[in-house]
Image (cartoon, rainbow, N blue to C red; front, side, top):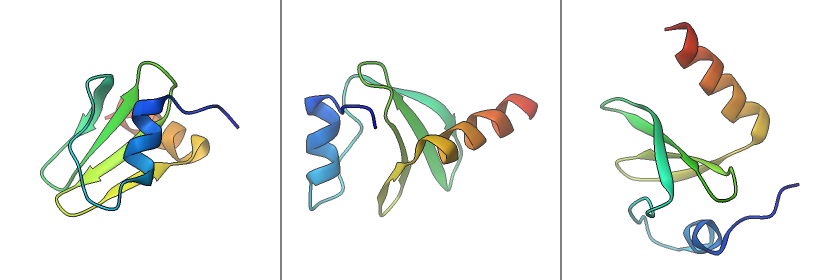
Length: 70
């Protein structure tokens, strides 16, 4: 398991929905959800209007592969 940077750790442990931090890069986005990738620790998140989801490595790879085909 990869180590999370302090920015992603705060985001993961936050009890409230927050905005992406400065090191998250948009990978894929639409009206329903946006996928972000951290430049520091390679962690991936899915942001919706109401929630933030930490994506597991296999799930994140599947999202990246599907967006490359689109």
